[in-house]
Amino acid sequence: MPEPERPIDTDRLRTAVGSANLPTLAMVTFQLTGDERWLADPFRPRRAPGLGPNDSGGFDEPTAAELRCSAVEAITEWSGGRPPAVPEPEPDLLRRMLSTAVAEEVPDDYVRLMREEMGIEPDPGPVRVDGTAQHVLIIGAGVCGIAAAVRLQRAGIGYTILERHDDVGGVWLVNDYPGAGVDTPSYLYSFSFADHDWSTHFGKRDEMIGYLRDVATRFAIYDRTEFGVAVQQAEWAGGRWTVRAGEREWTGTALVSAVGLFTNPVVPDLPGLGSFAGTAFHTTAWPHDLDLTGKRVAVVGAGASAQQVVPAIAGKPDHLTVFQRSPQWIAPDEEYFTPFPDDVGWLMRNLPYYHRWYRFRLAWTFNDRVHPSLQIDPEWEHPDRSLNAVNDGHRRYFTRHIESELDGRPDLLEASVPDYPPFGKRMLLDNGWYATLRRDDVTLVADGVAAVTPDGVRTTAGEHHEADVLVLATGFDAQHYLADIDVRGRDGTRLHDVWGDHDATAHLGMTVPGFPNLFLMYGPNTNAGAGGSFIFVAESQARYIVDLVARIASAGLSTVEVRGDVHDASVADVDSRHRRMVWSHPGMSTYYRNPAGRVVTNSPYRIVDYWAMTREADLADFHVS
Image (cartoon, rainbow, N blue to C red; front, side, top):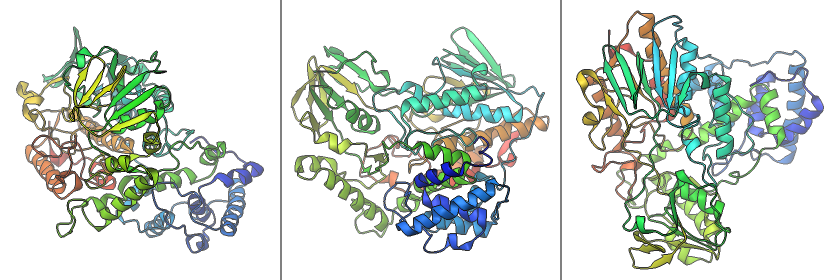
């Protein structure tokens, strides 16, 4: 964040605190004053149901007014030169503060993470190795590529990014369909090293791509990126990686795959698809000159992209038909479209500690809070519908939301309540999905698609639905990592031969035996299936990778390769944990699992666990030379 105003504009402060998140403001006031009453009733917030930021904290108006008034006084005194009373809380006190801020007990293992996140224990950064011969090739200029590039710069290591598109942004560059946006809160889904004044609680696609472009500009990443490069092959030989795209070649001492998980769209092999006489396309190829006015539009799919597209376009076509293979669990969130008042950005920029505490409260809600409820209780008496008592409570909560939204429409209700446990598939946020299904010009078809005809879609039940436009909201091929690139490691071994068709594995999702100096970002078993910000995971991976590269360089070494036994133990632990988790439940189909039933995309760990596992590389896990 930029430096706050000094002295602060007190009149503006009095106005701005009216838009403050009160549990966050209480933590700010405590750090500035050291007064214990801000950690006790009546200033301890009440836990709110759902996923919202709980700005009111559940305080009554007299309590809220007292907090705001005291906060203005404390912040004004701080602005005038009074030092904070508790600038660096000790671990026990910080844990108490964390638990107070979110109105529930926060485990001890979050203290170290939050001391670093809050700047109490600054991230020491990688070893500086300026002037070494290290040069890293990065494939992909999306979130992962940007995170790796910034970390490499901090280490003084040169790099080149090879990007197949014409700009940075990755998945946010490609997915520009109507309604595209982030389903993680904006102030959480952002880099720790690059703040931004977000306009809405959940960033929409255009603001997200603008943010990534701004970060790339701020850190001069454009200067080190070659665009329009579709990498086809990468080969390790002579202690270096050679990357090829057409007739061109690049060489580097290390290779980082930052191509992401959601790279290649799935276009289903529907009989008759080629015969469709109208306009047909995947959501990643939305035609920007397409006018839906008066058209009959068919959307195949009811997952994440469909649930953004359908409410965004409803009312423009003459009729909209949605083909749903299976329903999704959808959580209510009143802030999905809510803009931030200008005062919120002002508070983030000018109040000490405010941004850190606001971000922590979002992280707690969206990252690991739900993780314990994703474990299968073998004694649970309703294993067909849920995993355990808490998960069953989630089911009741989400079901009540569906019932309230579809009251009076038993036809839609029957088709919309999933028969598998909550979190078995990707959880979605309600952005008006159910309200859209209730429209007279929208039809939900809960049957599979049997075939496409020249003028519509025929279902497995034999019904035909006419259409002029066919939208394939059918997702991505998330199981074939690096599907478009022939990667060859030591002795010419092909990575795809090692993995087979659907069974990619890697130590911590990043390193593979037989492939020296190759590092995967958003690799196998690193998707945060329980929710949360993948940007945090990407930064954790970037830190681990650059730490490895910098440490071997500083020691005068050149090669690092994970040991086979370390890799195998890592994969065995992942598989063992997954066998006890929701994504192994047999009640649903999901891209998380390969055809053999093994979970290949998701991480079984909490975010805090993965952060601890990747905070510092252990060279004993590797062959180095």
